[in-house]
Image (cartoon, rainbow, N blue to C red; front, side, top):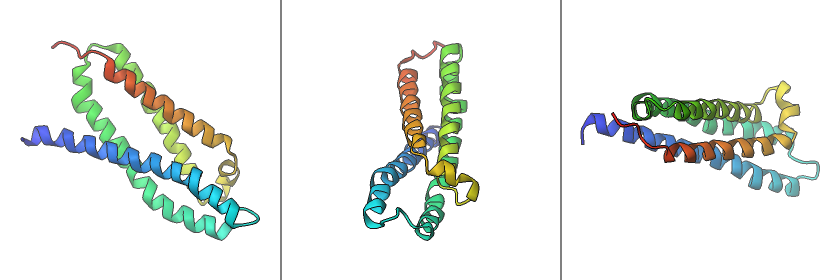
Length: 153
């Protein structure tokens, strides 16, 4: 296998791994950490515990977000954009998917923030619903993109 063949494969695996880490960690937090903290602590999660958790979670979450965006852009720029060169729909869907991904990653960063300004945002459950819906839409768009025929060169 040549370098030209191996790099796109490695980038694809990085992309998939980062997706699993990012989505898996947010699901674990939402469906395991939050309910457990409500059971374990009478007044909800103590501020000191939340601060310590967010500091550690940021270290786990932020690098995969950067790698996720970088590997996705690499794949788009070097592989898929050439395969779909004359397909405006594909590029429009990619643009929408990328903007939604930026929105989702911004929410992830806000939700793991330890800054005072983000407290009100973190405490609202509607953001979790928006986050899940956004991820679902992104996955749906990706599914449609995979079914588009490749342009004949």
